Image (cartoon, rainbow, N blue to C red; front, side, top):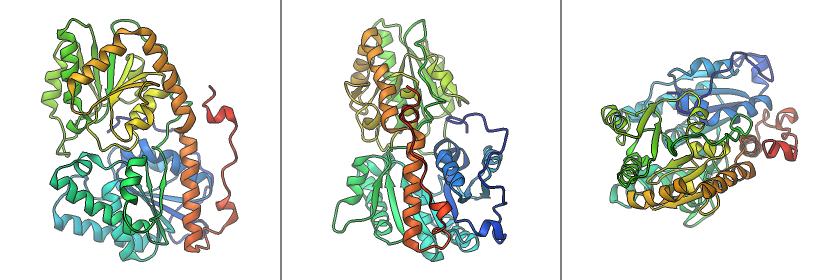
Length: 429
């Protein structure tokens, strides 16, 4: 899946040329960082800058993931690729137990100094596997809870309570820490007795050089949502909002960019997406290799999510490209889409309110330009990928210091990134 991916590098650029194969002397002298991520495309789209920063700081980096079409890219970066036979959608207790056992064996075999679990399934299975393996320090990144765990129904409350208990147990350990992407998830996790080791790192960051301000396109006002095609992303609500506006005579066009996800219970069938795309003013683009091409065509960025977000990378990229935002008023989105600053917000699951917000921005060019200008300022202030990578590296160093790892004590490895200039922090703006 290539929803957020850019073209893979053609040259391998690494800080050290020694092969990262366990047992070799050169690699053994470097602290071993292992990422546990469900899908290879997600690692490339959301964790690659952090992995590069760790590599350049002297870590030997391995990536354990299900390999699709991005395996060669991961290896070209100088990372050791460890294929995993698992799926985000698996629910069978026997399958989950088998996956847990394989990950525990993997940790015992690879002997990493530090493991970084990203998202819910790696967090749960990885935490238990690390306990069984009895060796690595653990950083867990909670990249949003998803609608299934942040809802108000009984199943969501029970599942959320189980995850919260596990993460609190993990975050209380001396050799572990949990990173959240928005303050609401941090409050949810911290509530209760004791003070678990929780830190806030807002999102996965955005490349401020790659995503630069784009001129507003000509032609009819176009809105775009870049996401997986899921009901929890509010795609149905957005389609209905646009239908209402067009029925009222507003010539508003909608672009949906992103793949279907047949393994996800919230996935929208491709037949339905194609039916929407056949309607006047609506187009489904499918997976998009370079999302800058979407923002070059769109005046307004939309995310109609029903909740469970971390900090949506698609909105960070849109904001970096200088796009006004219309989105739903849910945790995580509010961090980048700030009401009255660079965005108008509507309640989740309310197509009428979403349509009203879209109408306001679509019909007021001066408002749209003001919101667009502020969008770039919002991401430059706090969401650059270099800043996110540097803050994550600080956590790696803290965890290695806590474990007393001799590799982690290597001064060359523990050297902090150089202080960046104001121009670098602002992406040259």
